[in-house]
Length: 263
Ligand code: BTN
Image (tube, rainbow, N blue to C red; front, side):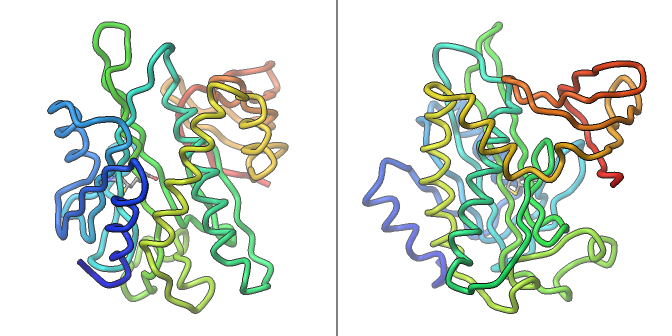
């Protein structure tokens, strides 16, 4: 295992996360799905050093060079009631954002770290992390949800394909320093557990934290949805994690899609 991931063994020993490490894999989400079907328990985490076919949202690919970034997928088996997978992405979003912020505290520098609805993390206004949540249903109940998390940690511009260079970044690119991926993974998982519990105990508080860290709210945005393109002011995120947009023709609720910030 690469030296900066070696603390994964400690997480495995000291917590109830069940960490499975792969040197190279097609996609951690695909592997986690397979393991879920084989009854692996909640809080199983698939981590890889390299993905051959990393998957992004809407069928896109997720650039996953070896030894540089975080590629991991969490298996969750929410009981009791159905969580829209949007909410699990928002939980991941604030867990990642707060973990990176904690990580950089000692730098004493001003960085902009924000959540962009539904599930991007922006570092100095460029994408540093993406989340791909995939739910599998049995009848109308959720059997399991896979939360796939990609964080660009130590990737340099040279590691990136040309077409990503204007919109994507990494922690290394923004700070000029390389970081231990294992420590960041540990922080993200610990925070994920805390915020996940808040879904049951204090969803309002959770949405407040997300909103305070969001760059989307109060802005004019363009939303690409299955029903077409809409423009308006992003007003809030409701208790399902859906975006409420105030448009010229009234309030619209957007359950999924991509948005761009217009101003
Ligand atoms: C996005 O399009 O923004 C979502 C990207 C999600 C990437 C992560 S990397 C780990 C996990 N495995 C995958 O194949 N995708 C997710």
